[in-house]
Length: 50
Image 1 (cartoon, rainbow, N blue to C red):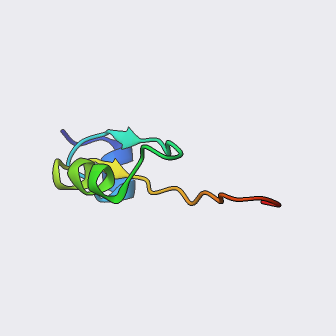
Image 2: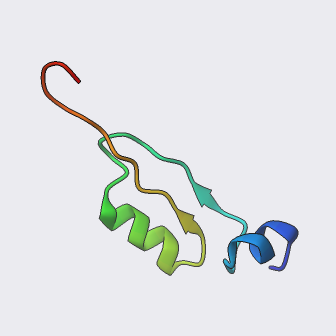
């Protein structure tokens, strides 16, 4: 599928996997990216004072 989004992002499909803290792991991001979408890896802080 070719859309403005796919052209802008360089993806095959206009699918963007939003960042999901604690479950948006590198495996999920890789799976979405390998399927032609845009996978987003989030950074989260854990522990006291963060």
